[in-house]
Image (cartoon, rainbow, N blue to C red):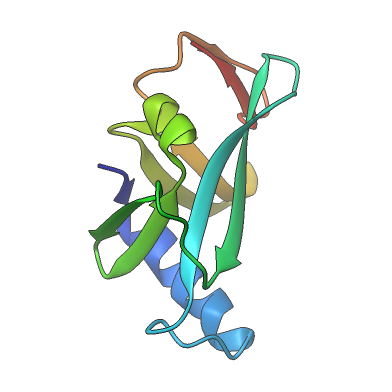
Length: 109
């Protein structure tokens, strides 16, 4: 399962509304790609096409889709959103990461 915090849900819904994307048609695609200072990086996009091996989750009113390979790195991860003075944006609370970089955009397992 991939989880979505309340603040992340609000921000995802706001971005979808601003982009005129219907939640019935579009979803949040989350993936893991090689790169970043720790070796692996998170990637997020809005998409409307699923692939046969995609893993689909609905949490807190947000549909999250990931490919099978990425899911192996993301199992039990929570998508968070921060809008405080110390930084603004999405970040992942990933219990599978053995280390992450200071900016939180890359990790290693």
